[in-house]
Length: 331
Image (cartoon, rainbow, N blue to C red):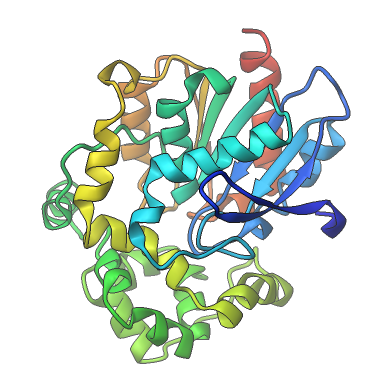
């Protein structure tokens, strides 16, 4: 993505956001708002965005709160979904974007879900990759979530959240960055089931400074780009998304209580790109959530691990383009 097209904007609550924006070159095409997750920045959309730009779409890609060159508040209360969503709406307002499709990956899918709940009138459609639409959760207990995942999957699903929420985990990760990067972006997707998902497993991997090779879809340049902001500014901003859910779940629950029950189900066109090799954000659970809550859903399987937007960039772009042209713009 062209570095000259990145901008900075201070939102209405005083948060500086860094983002890429290129308006549509075809007036009939919408803007695609591409929202990344953890531990990423706008860079992780670099294999998807160029195809949309060539196709005449507008593309807006922010560094999400806590990441890249966007501000990184220390207070986890600043990371509740309603505040982050309002930040993104402020950016859309500033750029005078009217026709927009929100597309999320990982935590970006959580943000996209809440955009669908809080601001449905602002969007044409919503797309999700690896992580599906997530309905509002007005009561959340992390330990019960772990127990439930064991009963459904046979193993802990989000055991690593506990490590991310611990005080000092940021320093452990930063001191063993190559080890951390090699398990978050694993060369073998099954490593997530054994060395990331179980309680205590990720901390053990990182503290032992274990390392593996890069996956086939990442280059050393990719790793350098993914790493530079975290090695310079630290990773605590990204970890705050997890601290909110583990340490202060009531803040997120209270935030979700502001959403009317009538907005829990989504009637807009929705798209779910299921990552079949993802051992944590399991495709079958994502399909079930889409089937329960999204009445106009398109589901596409990708033979990919969690990082489908990196490993299958052209396929992702082609599938989204087809969906937008055939299902969204026909509405």
